Length: 271
Length: 294
Image 1 (cartoon, rainbow over the protein chains, first blue to last red):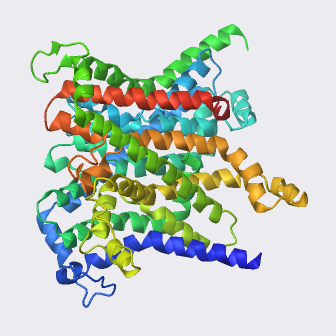
Image 2 (image 1 turned 45 degrees about the vertical axis):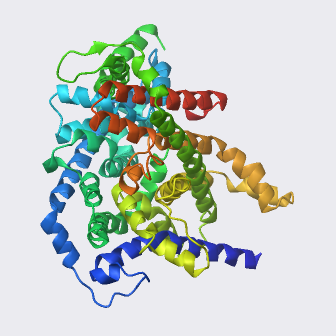
Image 3 (image 1 turned 90 degrees about the vertical axis):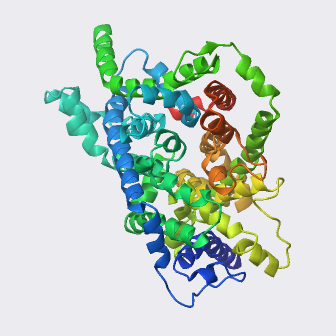
């Protein structure tokens, strides 16, 4: 029994090591002199630490612009999602009306539609709305993801009705109940929803590639992709760019680790 | 509830749902219908488009490159979906009970790749798998295995991308599955061990049946995402070698924005929609998941 447990521990540590080694290798490579990057035998400890790749990258590519663009789109998508799904989830979870089940079933079915496949017609719709190459055009389809509404609805429906009844006796209308009862007790759900949508939008690739074609509105994932396009492969620059793109995520993750993981576990669709 | 109250609630519900429904309508529902409409035309984005019926569809299925892309997508999905789910489930089971010393660090290491964006994942693995300077082929040679050229051999490229996807996404599934595992009451296991059931039997008679709905639901969502995979191939192989890793989404993207044949690209999108939506709908109904979600 005891040996079995240590075996399990050992396996966990080994897996964690294997899983994280690529990230470490990326960081090490980003600060290595170029000849050591292209060496046939891996050098885990660089002979000297150099930041020249970062300098070269920043001189060649508008990295901070990509970062800022990504941040604005993710923040915009998150804000719109939170506002719009709050009302919709209230209607689906706290109001009794004919057709509610039909709408809820449609919502579940909508989750099975991969929204990327809409990108060709969506391109023309967004173009006709004059939103091509705008952050709003990139963010709005993300705010329409049915998963967000589903998540909030699942939380709202489990709130006990007594609080709501008490508020109603005090003369609260639907907006009052929403503002004074539902939203305050749902803050963890809002945290989960925001984290989920922010990460999703931050890493979104397909739609940004199509809707943001001008160089000055590119997001981080789309911008980084330009590092691989050009003929000769410069792994030192590629690793420097990847590492710089990873650093914000790493820092935020180290600070908010518990919140992010519990947010994801709440947002991950389950029963 | 009295009828008038229900009706009034209906009006309020509609009002509350309206902003979301408008967004969803414009950016999710209308595109499906509009995409089908575009696919029936020789689409001209700036002038008049000619209605050609189902000719785009016929052309596609006669095009070996499209059939190849369809096939590649299925191969990728067949590798990636079980891998992502299985690795996620194994991680969740391993980390399940909290007594592992340093469990939080292990969990963080397994989850962190999910926070990388797809370009970083693709760029990083191109480097790791590089036949000359990559550390994966290097260490394979060290242990005496002759490494294949992972991203440059037609037979291996799609399974390789599936493994990379599992590295990227399994941590997310781990977190979701673990939440499901933790929701199983402990007394079930206690009762089972009193009855003399070992951990293997406990897994098959308690854990697996109780986890079934969440595993199946995760499977459907992973399928939906996997069938539309684009980022990984675009960064790692650009569909190569040749067209060995050209999946449907990449074929659609190229048809639209490299060949500017928007009608045919929309047809690819609609075919993908029919396949993915059809399969998930059938799975959803056959597996009886509807009641689990309300």
